[in-house]
Length: 229
Image (cartoon, rainbow, N blue to C red; front, side):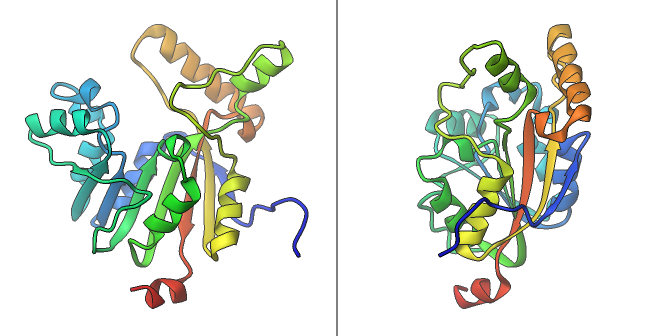
């Protein structure tokens, strides 16, 4: 029986901006965007150029979005955007994709390991799954711990992940964690948000583990993908 800690077997780095990396990976590919309707009321109709789903649609060969939020899906539809109502933990879309993007979704799920398994089953051979999620060792959490304060937890977050947890999921199912990139979102909504974002990046330079978020790239075992196809 294997015991002990989890060792990251992937490349580890830092991204100055996560969105260009995702768009580069999605270029001219068939893409599934999981949680596509998240925050859609903030972006449509007037700020769609800031919306990841819209930006993906400009570079992909084919784009499918899914979400479980019927209200947000309806809002997108009223603005001319089709998003399917489907749960990434249980869905059966009867098709495969070159790339699946799950951006800031895994921390909301009841069964995150099951979701990863389900999504990988929807990958084409040589396909990739990109996961982004908040980093529980970011500087804000560490500062609160030092000051004896409770962590700040978003109301709908039911789990937190370090890269080692993603590696553990990969180890369990025979997937490959290809890369991990730490990053901080650049939020320019107000001057205060901008200052906070720049501070996060500055602290992240001291240790990448202090960045607010990370991105993980997962590939299935090619043999397993072919066997389940």
